[in-house]
Image (cartoon, helix red, strand yellow):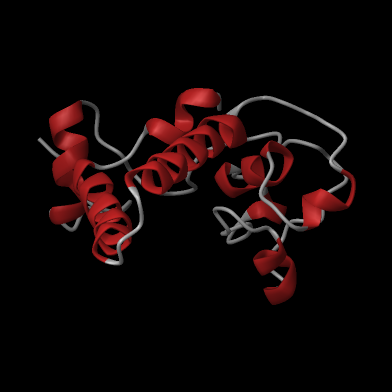
Length: 140
């Protein structure tokens, strides 16, 4: 897990998310400067939250997503399964009881438990549309 992990997305997810967020901002009349500021802040947050950075967050750690919080979203440790969903505001996971409350700063293991991911860019992009499951044969 490192700072580039926030850049790994399916091509269609990237397009869909950008259209669903940026189109309404444009249609609602937000200025170009405001939209650019949003893109910079979200881009920085994606890189920063995947970095291996520990800082003394104090009470801020319960409000916004930090690297110490977000790394648990990618963990395969038992205590992290189905936890830390929030992308920007950590208080949402605390509110719904889905926040990891570990004494460790970062998890011991990362990755998806039980899911198969084929090798190669094209196969990975096609995988969600092929109904591939962990019990299925690997994609050709």
